[in-house]
Amino acid sequence: MILNELIDFVGEYGELEITGISHNHNTVQIGEIYFCFSEDKNQAKSCVLTALKNGAVVAYSKFNFNLLRTIKIKNVRGEFAKACYNFYGRACDDLKIIGITGTNGKTTTSYIIGEMLKRNGKKVGIIGTSGVFYNGKTFDCPLTTPDADFLHKTFKDMRDDGVEYVIMEVSAHAIQQKRIEGIKFEIGVITNITQDHLDYFKTFENYENVKLSFFKKKFMKKAVLCADDCSVKKLFNTIKIPYKTYGLNNPADTFGIDIYCSINGSHFVANVYDSVVEIKTNLVGNYNVYNALAGLTVCKMLGLSDKELALGLNFINPVEGRFNVINVDGKYVVIDFAHSPDSLMNVLSVARKLTEKRVFVVFGCGGNRDKTKRAKMGEIAEKLADFVCLTDDNPRLENSLDIITDIEKGMKKNHFVEIDRKKAIKKMISLAMPGDIVIIAGKGAEKYQEIGSIKYPYNDFDVIFSIVNNNNESEELS
Image 1 (cartoon, rainbow, N blue to C red):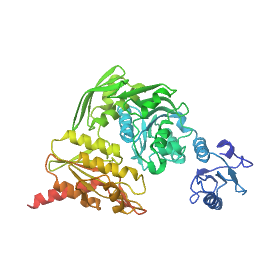
Image 2 (image 1 turned 90 degrees about the vertical axis):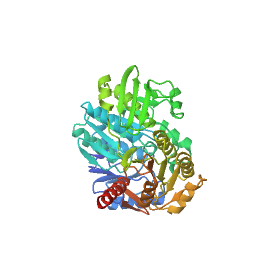
Image 3 (image 1 turned 45 degrees about the vertical axis):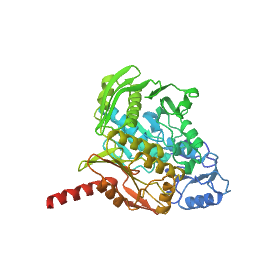
């Protein structure tokens, strides 16, 4: 493929043969074009020189360096996405792509839609926090929404393997950084907007505006909106594409009635714009009823019948790391990814409704991330749980005790502090009695603990299972 088939800005280099596209100056290969994302001129020049030395055919940046084989362009990330789109044969045009954004619920809603389609004979691919999945294949995903090179290569691989539908999470970072430029989504979904990532977006208003900016004709054909979210409702007066709404508390096209939730799942009747479907699902909690309603709305938009909607959703298994319940000697231990104020409040509120006994919670906050949410999460935990233990959750380059001190600024009552996450979990489970619920929040299915700049192998499930095994061994010896 030659350069002028990939991008409009080619200068005198349009006929050069291109073997690939890269945005990493250290790993760029001979024959590839390089896009420099740096906003700092000195750093950008260093990266460009390294990329050219490593064999880049042409280097793009936002600066004019007066060097051979360098081209200045204004919208580096957008043009990078466009080049990737073209290089991988515009594969996304051959797929029906559903994009899901929102602070909470993206992964579960993606999973629900994917499972509903698969149960009805569709070939489905999923891209998101938990990885890339299609046709029995599983790959790690570098980001919730990967950069355009990874994304478009994945689209091509999926298309070539017969995938029809792709369900993908769309993060605010991806929208801001133009990773999704060139993709025309069949349907876009927004679950909610609550505080998160203010370390990057600085203000909630900026974060909100980025999320809402996804809902344009440029990106999608149709939309599904949550009618119960204050931020999402702002779209009702501005959106220029066909849309359906879902919710429980405000008028909506899709809604649920007769809702019953237990520790084992949820049962409700869904009205999916005039189709009545009885739902029995293993997904726990009111917020998962919302995720289910979003999935039902999308799948009806895609043409599933009432019977297919019920078949797709009933008895669906929980998503790994999302309110997974493990019975430990009559104590209900719940592993959940909740790592924002709203998600922690949702999980703890559900736990309170599911037991008349006590609720315990173990959680921490990530280092080098939004510090303003820490005290809020401490306040929520203290308000909704009977016992709170603060611990590590990917402290990264921050001191663990500094993070915990920030959380404690929102707390007034006594609580436990145990930096070692394994010890914290064991302590809280040992204090719990049968019928109590112990929430292990923040990491979900993550397979690592990031301390300093190193990711050490770690998994909350492994800790729970080791406790169960030790208990069983103790019983055998007694």
